[in-house]
Length: 320
Ligand code: NAD
Ligand code: UDP
Ligand code: UDP
Image (tube, rainbow, N blue to C red):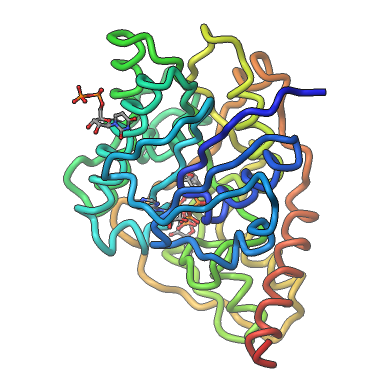
């Protein structure tokens, strides 16, 4: 029997956050979901609302929040380039003021706090695959900087709150993650390609499609986040969490087309500025510290994600 903890999940109505809330409830904890519904939706958590240990509050983490909790997972932040560049100033405020408020909260109630950081702290990396001690190559002036620098500064704040106030911190650097409950208009590559292929529209490859990413299924990622939270206080991270199976964007498109049936074709679009050319996690540290590695092969994860979007698109056609 595990003891019931009061867990705050910011960004809990988003893609990863909603899976995390679900898993924490299944483990017997009480979960407080805080979200301003910028990119998340109530649909993602509708099935959790009847649960007696679940509560959801609409709140923007760039403003203070006074609640009593034992653990905080700070996931609130738009994650897709399209959405974080829509209002870049708000993205930076969310990352930095959100981190300050969650750290202030953790300090007051003596909670553990985990930051959802990102592989974007490595920018367009010169070291490959990326280990945690690589300091990154971020353009601080470009269109991705609101996200990258916001997340980098949040990491700084986490380590300063630990040194200055002894706050118990954990920092996860999350690499590209996909799965059910991504928004159909999320704008990231997996959801774009699947929705385009299912609708018989051209699949949009930015640039030549030779850039690489490594895609982690959401269930594996959530397992890694929970394991990191459960580590002893001296373990702070940063720890990379992602799937080290690296593929090109073009190969991803071909795999998705094969799963969704032919019919759709590939169409080239301009490559966005500062788009990283290669990205793949070195997960040696996560293996050693957490005994964790991804279990779901890309093929299986993509099948499950295609099934999710297929059902959603059918619902929207039939009006259910
Ligand atoms: P998402 O956009 O689905 O979820 C983000 C959630 O945060 C949404 O529900 C959104 O409404 C909420 N939010 C945004 N600004 C907020 C604010 N100011 N106050 C309260 N809530 C706010 O994205 P996701 O993929 O689930 O990402 C979750 C976290 O993981 C983010 O912090 C993201 O940076 C990080 N991350 C994700 C990935 C990935 O591949 N999915 C990779 C690296 C890091
Ligand atoms: N804060 C919060 N919830 C709390 C405690 C603090 O949102 O339960 C916010 C608070 O508004 C402050 C921030 O966290 O702006 C940082 O708190 P800290 O105690 O570090 O700073 P101070 O209040 O001394 O500025
Ligand atoms: N991409 C693409 N077509 C799309 C969306 C994205 O080719 O419709 C590319 C994008 O240029 C990048 C990669 O896919 O090289 C991953 O993009 P995503 O926005 O998912 O995440 P990123 O890793 O860039 O943050």
